[in-house]
Each structure stands twice: as structure tokens, then as C-alpha cells.
Image (cartoon, rainbow, N blue to C red; front, top):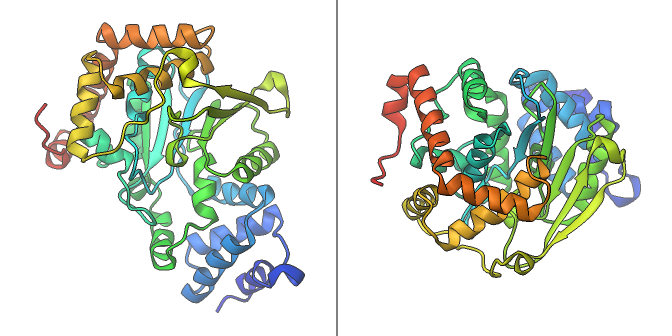
Length: 364
């Protein structure tokens, strides 16, 4: 038994009347001890569920991020006129609505906006469709690359993917606890604002509940982050919904610590109020391939809605209407499809043997 960890557990697990929040330093210590296995399994399980019940604070999330910075991977800074956009998407995937973020990433990269994504395999608690499987269906396999080779792909193409099982294996033990507990602990919240990129970054984080957004703002402010976007997105992702008003928070260096609120109504821009449901992975990939060919569809509408917003938010376009028009042009002219081919070729050149052995076989 680790007595230091036991004291931290007592603070978060003592109930409403005597329990205490951890300091930033204590949260970092607890996170390091769990990742390194210095706490016992009983202590780790008890901490994770107690911390969920208590609810984390922004200060605690900042400390957890400090530990991830100390122990985890970082892609090195690349030469870019714009901050690299880091998309924070729930690691446990999607089960109800069709994701669009891989298309969004390709579209942004085709327009000159670098993007970094991160995630893992099918993971608890939802065991939904993860990003890596979508990328594999599109012909891009991130899972066999070292961090150094991922760095090369980012530099060559403007897109990178930090694959946690390969690049941050210390986190794998935590996933086992998450499965056994059946609930998402604060790690699942913190991961959405984790930035595995060492250069100038623009963090984009999805959220479901309004208190989570406030925690994000507090945690990032404590860490000196002044450029981020929060999106009340589909299933907690960065994907803008079409069945309701998109609620977005904006912070830039120019606005200091004052977050600006943006409400985007799909019908105001000619989009119907309808999210695309998630079918099989094969169906989703085929629909995405059709989008890349410029074929009209409901998923194309989702791609334009999201692409328009992110092209505006990145500063490439002056407003939403210009962003939507730019997204439509990039898809129509084949520039996004060409970016996918560029990423595929880059990874193949770096890792041809592993690449061929892992790709999903999906006939386009």
C-alpha cells in the first residue's frame, strides 16, 4: 500500500462534509502514481470512482494535464503560419451519430491548417466507433507508426494522429479500470483538453454538460492557454450538430480570459435539422468516400456545415458563409481527396509492411 496515495484518496473520498479538492500539485502526483502503478489496484479503483462522484475541479484537471505532459508523448513544433488545431474527441467513440472529424481534418489540412488528433481503439465505457478505425477504412493506418514517424507525416501532410496504445502505453492500465468501473472517470474529461503537441496550438474540445466547459476554461487558464474552442457537439465530440443550435465557446489571445459565446443555427445557413445516424463502419466509410468525390448527400451537408465553421475559426475564411463556400470548393475540386491520398502515401512510404498488414479491406 502507498501511504502518500492513500492520503490523496482520503481527500477526494471523504464525502460532502469532510472531503477536499486536490491542489494542482496533488492532482499531478496522484495521476503520475496511477499511471506508473505506484498505487495499488484497490487504491486506483477507489480513487477513480471517488473522484467521479466528487467531480473534478479545473485546478485538478490542470494538475492531471501536468502529469500527462511529464510522462506522455509530444509531437514537436512544425513550421506553420497558423497554430496547429488539436481536436479533443472522446476516446470511447461514437454509437449513434455519424462522425465527420476525419473529413474535417483532411479539409482543413487541404486549406493549409495543420491538425492533430489523438485517441485509441474501441474503449470503455461506450466501446463506440473510434477514429482509428474510420481512418483505416479510408486507407490510412496510424497504428503502426512510431511517434517519430507520425511527426514526419505531420510535417509532410499537415495531419498527425497520436495513437495512445503505441505512443502513451502508460494509459492502457487506466482503461482497464474504466471498463471494470463502468463509469467515465475524470481522466475521460481531461483527455478532451490534452494537447500532445509541443508548438503553438489551438485546442478544440467537445463537451456534453455545461459545467464541463467551465472546468475546461479554468484548467486551460491555469496552464496559460489563451487559444481554444469548446463545442457542445455530437456525443461530446467536436462535430457540430445539425438537429439543434450549435453552442460554441471561443477564446483567443485578443480576448484575454473572456470567453465569447457563439450560437450557430443550421437553418440560417441552408442546412436541414437532421443528424446523420451511424450505421456500420463500412457504410460510413462508403459515405465518406462519396463525400470526397463531391457527391451530394446528407453526410456531405454535415461535412460542409463543419468544414465551414472550422475554416472560419482557423482564420482561413472571413465568416461562416465564406467557409462553407470554401469547403464546397475544396471537395468539388478534389483537393480533399488529394490530401487523403497524400497522407496515405506518406504513411505507406514510412511503414509499408505494417501498413499493408493492418488496413481494413473496404472496396470503394
